[in-house]
Amino acid sequence: MREFTYLRANSVADVPAGATIIAGGTNLLDLMKLEVMAPDALVDITRLDLNRIEPHEGGLRIGALVRNSDLAADPVVRRDYPVLSRALLAGASGQLRNMATTGGNLMQRTRCPYFYDRRMACNKRDPGTGCAAQGGVTRHHAILGASDRCIATYPGDMAVALLALDAVVQIDGPAPREVPLADFHLLPGETPHVETVLKPGEVITGVTLPAPVGGEQRYRKVRDRASYAFALVSIAAVIRMEQGQISHAALAFGGVAAKPWRDGDAEAVLLGREPSDALFAQAADILLKPARAFGDHAFKIPLLRRTLMATLRDATGLEATA
Amino acid sequence: MQIRLHVNGDAHDLDLDPRTSLLDALRHHLGLTGTKKGCDHGQCGACTVLMDGRRINACLTLACMADDVQITTIEGLGTPDRLSPLQQQFLDHDGFQCGYCTPGQICSATGMLEEIAAGWPSHVSDNLEGPFAPSHAEIAERMSGNLCRCAAYTHIVAAIQQAAMAGSQREDAA
Image (cartoon, rainbow over all chains, first blue to last red; front, side, top):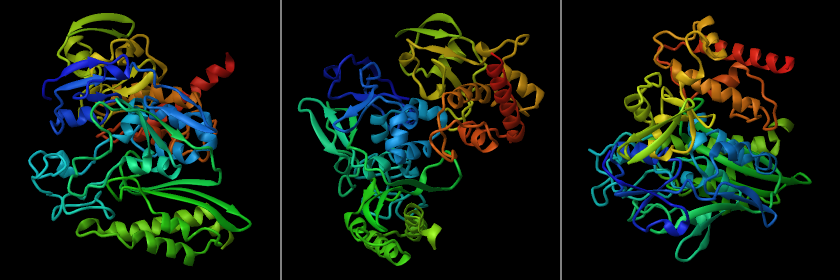
């Protein structure tokens, strides 16, 4: 690990623009040990008062320092936003969830092995050096929204559920602002090293959720082993039915792009319709129309289709009535 | 930099490089070598300790960030002549082969049983409301952050289940 200056912030105003923020540290310290990240200064924000889960405009405000384990076990989250509990519980290990924070989880870096290996070309780690993943061994790589510069994915689970719940990220800094989670992460384009809209000197202070929408909520994660593994694909689904027809459909996808993915057209086709495999196939066609994969991870395109079909059957009760 | 660590009830003043992990501070600076270094990247769980009663990976924690919390290591859970209930069950069930992962397994299981007692659900729980029984499936899922290269998992799960049942019986009697 390279040397760094350790600072401790007592307020958001204490956070210097040039410093790298550390909270749970579970991803950052891993990357610093490998010298994939080598910040000159670390600012520890864990003493800031951002630990609360509280009511907010009919919904919920989750402080940026709320630990993943506390968020998953929160009684209100379990009752009103079960897809969020399920996504959190599907991620990492008990030890890591006890450290990882809400804000830090949004900022976690990709698990692309070429990003992790400093001997390999990586436009995300060292802009302009190329992308060794393309033509290399691929598995956890993108099928949607990738560019010729980068095919890495955002690896997390929590943010996938937050996206299906229409979460908003609260940001403090020189000009405090709120950013819908859908706009927080960026696709790689020409600049894969720029992963979010967060600017130097800005701090995530919390995430808000709108009033609960109820319905059937599912988090379905497909991975290489049953526990403690990153998603090959995952789906957060919030589906509400009225009189046999789908009246609300929010679908977010993990493990498939550089950001948690959502497709409004694939959701819209479901609305006002009775559940059927033909309808679900239509939604999958829309979702996967822009999907591209060259190499080993091309299997994720049919995998995502099957996982979406299964999730929709489960959430609409189609299997039970068929 | 000057750091005060509170470990197993004792305060220790240390002068450490900020890069020092909590794991290295425990092993190299305090001589508490019960906590083990396996992968040093949070994947194996051998370094698991309790921080204010919660299980965490000491390898992914900077010592300088842990100066105002109570840390409990395997040395603080029990002693050779006064074993913790989990330590006794690991012995009774032969819950190891080489023993390298064992301190992390026992610290992790100690924290994990508290999580079940607090009503925390897991990925394999049928519902999110609880209460949750320490079934084989629940323990296997909740302990997935602790690897055993000898694959003594069958006996590890049996030891933890026995400790969980003995613990709930003690609570019922109290």
